[in-house]
Length: 369
Ligand code: ATP
Ligand code: MG
Image (cartoon, rainbow, N blue to C red; front, side, top):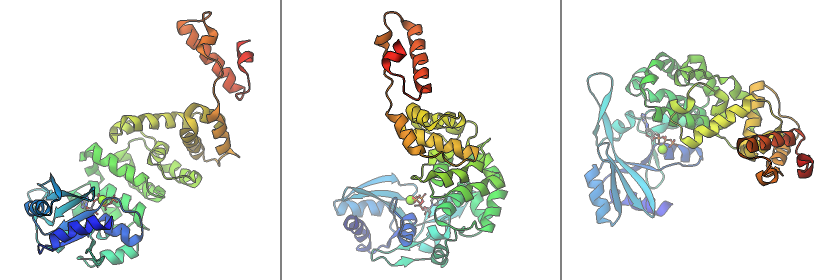
């Protein structure tokens, strides 16, 4: 991973430019957490980045040339190289961007102090705002500048505030929280894709329950997901004991038109609906395992008990596994030609229901006899 990255940084620094890692990768490396994507910031203009990459024989794609982003491919990996930017105030609140040579300007337009850290190729961390490193080690998620003004430039920052606090913060910053609450009406203007992506990232945090409870308290959760109820989330986190799963957590919140509001994929919205439906009907773990399979069966069982405020039943995981392994012993052919068409389907379902109710004990001949 290091060599291609050094090549991309070197291509810029050897030409006399600044080239720095920035944002999530610096923050996460400092915390010892996994890195997602690698972003590079530079004072070189996008055309210059394209030229230098071409001279070095590397593929460069002008992915977002208007925003200053060029993707440089090295060692089979994509590196997003973005020119320093500064905000230019236009009429109204929304800022447009212009390129900049100044790392301080680039840092000032980022959302949170711990997201405004940079690192050189040798690993030296730069903190142009002079607050990011201290906030990071205190796990204090704090807006860059005035929270109210920063939120009004981009209301998605409300959701990012809770997302990053859940992942990397400790307590909610009170000024940030107050500004989020005061500006929640702005959430309505955001695209559903952006809202959905942030909500899923938030719910994928190790423990999003405190952040989501705070969102509910301020009315932000209901603004994003009308009808949602945060109360099942903390019990679910307590019961889970399995890898974080944003969709399982989303299912416990409920709400109307969730798939539509968060622009979930077909597969995601189907799974959400299955989980939600199963969680609301009290079925034994064996039955959930049989109907939904081991994975979704376990999720539905967890959801049900979280919503009921109950502990998990003894041996639930084994019981779900047992259900998931059961195979209905009767086939359509066993009932033909006596039954055909709709009557055949009905008979099969009736026999299956009897078999399930028997705890999967009735044999094929007992069912057919
Ligand atoms: P991760 O990729 O792990 O989710 P990240 O910090 O890299 O976290 P991204 O959404 O990838 O988050 O954004 C990269 C960086 O760009 C951020 O760290 C931040 O500095 C800046 N940034 C992204 N979105 C915004 C925004 N809406 N307002 C201000 N700055 C932003
Ligand atoms: Mg990132």
